Image (cartoon, rainbow, N blue to C red; front, side, top):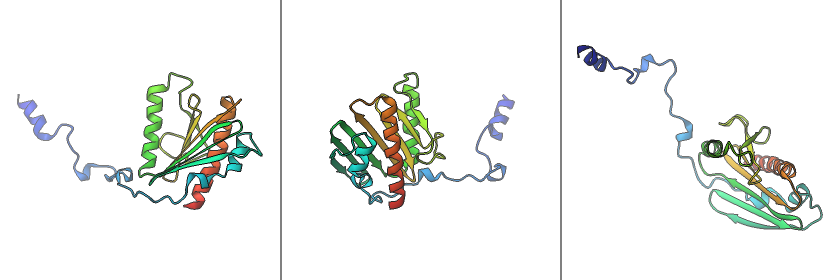
Length: 187
């Protein structure tokens, strides 16, 4: 009984005194509240209809763009010809890197065993130093690419007649790279 009491009093596994740490304890910047409404760019302005038409194999086709904008989210969806839908979503709400990582972790947790829903990471699009190991990932089943870059999440979804997975992915990569470049320029 005395041994148990002595262990409790001396602090078995308790908080370390500040002098006992090897590195200073700092609050993560990801917990800061952030600021909403900072993005001025609109998704339909980030990618021109001609760029979307060329990337989706419909050059010369007039694609109609339908915008949907709110405070921290801007969406544009293009239609026309073989393009059933190409959608660009730009999410600039606070803590985007943490939300990107959580999306990726949930995709792995719930769908890693399903090859069509498994997140397939892609380097060279967004910030590859982001949590998760790569700046972007692709999901076959949804034909959606999700990227993180400079406090923004960019999603590109591709649904074009005659496109298999490789064509849809290549189109999404082309459009996501262009969108990330344009958004960096607007920052």
